[in-house]
Length: 98
Image (tube, rainbow, N blue to C red):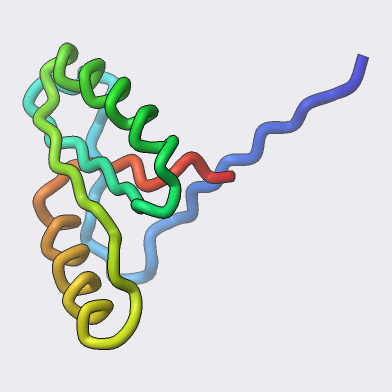
């Protein structure tokens, strides 16, 4: 039988970063979970729809963010909106890491 190695994609915070990750071992009650999606990967919307109902069942509020424009003035606006969205959430699912 082969061996499977699971990599941890997290990195330590940057020097001077004051953000502290939420403690999820107490459950999701009262947390705001961000769900970031990209319209170019339509099947991921089905995944997020399923997860959203599970997060809500466990007491989380949901804030979705759809990435559309990536270039020019619209891209700059999207990056500004993304930065604002990131301040609204306690934690976020931004992709499946594949």
